[in-house]
Structures are given as C-alpha cells and as structure tokens.
Amino acid sequence: MTIEEAQQWARQQLAHIDDVRADVFALLGFVLDKNKTYLMTWPERALTDEQLERFEVVVHERVNGKPIAYITGRKEFWSLELETNESTLIPRGDTETLVETALSLDLPDNARVLDLGTGTGAIALALKSERPNWQVCGCDKNGAAVALAVRNAIRNDLDVEFFQSDWFSHVSVGKPFDLIVSNPPYIEEADPHLRQGDVRFEPLSALVATGDGLDDIKNIIIRAKSYLADGGWLLLEQGWQQADSVIELLTKSGYKKVNRWQDYASVERVSGGQYVTAERDK
Image (cartoon, rainbow, N blue to C red; front, top):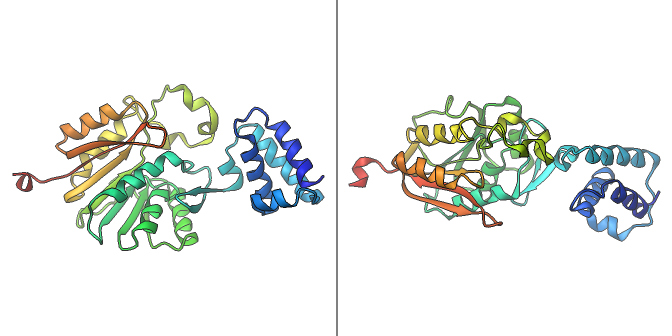
C-alpha cells in the first residue's frame, strides 16, 4: 500500500471525525516518522508490512476515540513539542491564553513564578521559553506527571524545577512568588461533556472539581495570598461559564485589579487579580 492509498483508507475509517485529514497526517507521520511535507511529496512510496500493520493499529485506536496526543505521545504547545501520556491532561490551545496573559503583566525581570497542577509542564515551560530570566517552577500531586514535566524540560532544554505537591502542601512560604498560575480542575462532576471526545480518556482527577466545579479554584484563591509577594499576581484558567463566579471569588478575597481575559474563541478563559497588602493599599 502506498502513502496515498494508506491515507485514503484511513480517511474512510475516520470519516466521522471533523478534521480527518489532520488526524490522518498526524497518525501516518507518526508511524513513518515523517512530516506532512514528506507525505505530500512522496504519495507513491510504499509502506513496509510492519509500517502498514502499525498504521492499522493506530487508526483503529483513533476510531475508538483515543486522542491523537495519547497515540503519538506528543503534542505541540506554544511552539514546544511536549511528551504526553495518560497521567495528565492534553495541553490545549485555549490554555495559551493563560501564558499570553502572564507575559503581558508588569513583573520583575527575575520574577519568581509557580505553576500549580503543572501536568505536562506546558505552562511553566512556555513561560520560561519566553522569559529566560524568570525563576519558574511547577508542581503536581501526581508523581507520574512530575516525572513527565521533568522530561519535557530536558527535551526543550529549559531550566524549570518540578516537584510533587498537592497544591501548596509542599510549597515553601519562605520565598514569595511574583506570579502564580494554574489550570486547575473546573468541570462539574455531572457535566455530560466528560463522556464525549478526548476527555473520556483523560484523568478525571485533573478535570473534575466539586462544588459546581469551583472548589479547587476557591482553595487556590484563598491560599495563594500566603505565597504571593506584595504586588504579586494570581491567574487562573476557568470554564466557559465560570468567569463571573471566579471574579466574585477573587474580589471577595481582597485581590485588586481583578480582570478577565478571552481566549481565541472569545470565551472568557482566564481570570486573575493582584495581591496587595493592607499597608501598600493605603
């Protein structure tokens, strides 16, 4: 079977998928270890029996709904290639809004930054790639996720410290942070979307929060003040209908300059505020 014939067969198998061409290119490129340009340039080249067998396996995995990022074990985020596995969420383009917002803040040149619930390390690594002088670290309660984030730091040659911590449980209060960022669980337990698409394969612990999906966000908002420097910022990713609730929580907890930021689809994806001590606020 040639490259073109393999693509035609796969498109028939995956006809129910919206962006089927992109999926086929990704899967075939993964099996052949070639990029899209190669696949388009050499459509007449034949697959070996071993390559064809492997391609059939991964296509059937995708037919059954397994996300591309878990099949290939990689995902691009903020131009970084990240290793992915089923211990963590798949990095998504929407979360780049959190990175963009953080980079827009007026922070010290050597800002100390903490990424809570870092997963693959995507947010922390993206920030470090743009601000090499920032002192960036990330934590996750899942040891497998921490190990994955460490590998991604090595893969991208970025000096970011990752460690295991259940939110702030192992974060030192001795050195306050200029910025704390987090993409925490924020989906309600009964949300029907948990039974649809890629999220069916992702760890529920990284997706679901109690209390209408807001309990982890509440916990972070309350506790972050003990770890922020005077004038430090807290930024949180949230669900598409949660901005008003998160803004209210930040305001009631005393944060200043509380604001919300939209993602590429004009969804209010990030909310945040600045921690200011009572003395400075006078």
